[in-house]
Every structure is written in C-alpha cells, then in structure tokens.
Length: 401
Image (tube, rainbow, N blue to C red; front, side, top):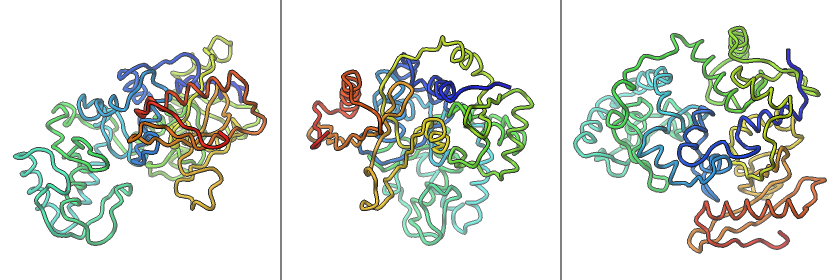
C-alpha cells in the first residue's frame, strides 16, 4: 500500500487536472481531450464571467475560447449535453453507456396519457421542418407531465405541452440539442448528427452493477483522488453506501483503482491505476511544478468534493449563488484562486460585454498570503486572460481591490 503526504496528494490531483506546470491541454483539441479525461463537466447556465463549463476549460486549456466548446457540441458533435452529474457535457462516444437512462426515460414518458401521440407529432414535424424550440413547435396547450431527470426543472402538474414533449424526446435520446440561443434550446433529431453505429451500439455494461463501477471509476478519474465517502462527487449516481462499497471493492480487486494512505487523512484515497506513473513522478520529484495562477469554476471537477479539498488544502469554499445576499460571506459568483499548488484566495468578477469591461469587484486573499510582486503580476495576468476570454478590452477594479 502506498503512503503519501498531503503535498504529494495535492500535486497528484493538480497534475492530473492539468492545473500545475506547463499547459497539457491546448486549443479545441485540448478542450476535447480534457472532457474525455474528466468524463463529464457540469453545465450551469449562469453567465457572470463565463458559464461553469467554459470556466472549467478556460483554467486548463491554453487559448481556449467560448466558441471552441460550442463547436465541439453543435458542429463537430464530439460532445453532447445530457444528464450525468446533473446536466453535464460529455463525449459523444460514451452514448452507449447511458442506454439504460434512455430506456428508463422512454418507460417514464409512456406512463403519461397523451405523451406518445405528441412525440409522434413532434418527430414528424421536426423531420420535415428541422430544429425547433418550445416556442416554434406547433403543439399548443398543457399536459400533465414531469421529467424523469430532476435537473430539467419540470414540476408535477400541468406544463406547456410543446416544452414537455421536447424534453421527453431529449431524455429519450430521440432528440439532441441542436444549438442554443441564450438560454433557449433548439432541438433536432439525434440520428441526423450521431452515426447509426453509435446510436445502435450495445451497452458496454451488461448490468447495473458494471455500469455503476464504470461511473464510480469515471468520477475518481475526474477528480484525481477520491475517498469512499458520501460526497457531491457522486451526484447523479443512484447508489446506496453498500453499493458504493461494492463498486470500490470490485474496482480495487480488478486493479482499476489503487489506494493511498495520506498523512493526516483518516480515510484512504483512491486513484486510477493508469495514473501510477504520474504519482511516481510526483514522489520522485520529476513532475512539473511550475506555478500558474488560475481561477476555478464554482462547479469545477476538482471542487466536487469540498470536504476533500478542505482536508488536503485547508481551504473552505462554498458557492453562495443561492445564499441570500445578507448571509453571504463573499459574493454571488466567486471563483477560487489557485496559485501553484495552493489555494490563495477568491475573486469576484463580472463581465459587462456591452461596454467591453471586466469589473473585478473583490479579491479576498487567504490568511497568511502576502501580495508579493510575483503574486500581483500573476493575478494581473490571470485577470487580463479572463477579460479577453469574456471579450472585454478593459478591466476595472472596485474600491480597495
């Protein structure tokens, strides 16, 4: 059994994430390869200084632009929007693994009176007329329906029929998101964009237990190191603690994951066996530890288990977007600041794209962090990158920043 220090655990996670040393991911190809490595990245529509998925990639991928992710999703079709860890973005090649989700959705939809007939009408219209939104699909009225996927925002009661049938066909896998205009989604038939071989491929997981193991392994790889504990890292995976234990035991027995005892951490941490060479480079001091300063997204894969972050880094982070304003400690949309292998603070920034200005409202440094010249220079550079990423030609700082 391996025994590592907390510093070594931190460096393994950061190296796996591509957040320490020179950039491992560059351009659109790099963005795609990072999503493949992570398995999925969470989507959130809030756009204060970039949406969550975009900020996740911006911190890791050299030269990343918002258009690259849109192209990967809606032109190249190498990525799809679908459920996983809540609503997520993941590689299209993983489509066969989620066939059980789609079958569950189809059975769920068929249980509502009127939905099958509406689905037939919607598919016929889309096949003849192309992409539609809930506003342009000519199906009126309301229907009793709710989605089998809780992230949809639908409720148990009367809902707009056009919106309901589109979401049902989307969770069925019959439709994909064709594109988005702001927050509005336009749907088209999946068989126009995904190959027949992919759409008809058998599920690589023969049963629920093997699918669960695949997903647990995928989440461990997304973070880099995880423990077998209740955690937000498992959101979207329906499993009991006993099922999680069984998945960990099976993955360890087959050599897919390895465990490491970490100083000061009560529970063992697990990592993918394929990352053993990466850990060895950390242990022998040959890993790239050149400092970078990056702002992390609120739902960044590295932050999925915030108790683990606190245990390894001593850094407490809470996304306060849903906290009443008078109870917030920091702000509405605050990003953690990573400098080298340390969390050194957090930043609140907002992009005003009409005026081309990135407003830095606040920067809070952690206790004991001094704003040295190198740190100030690194912060300035990261703020300029964030401004350019948001199409802002200038930055403005609040009082005292």
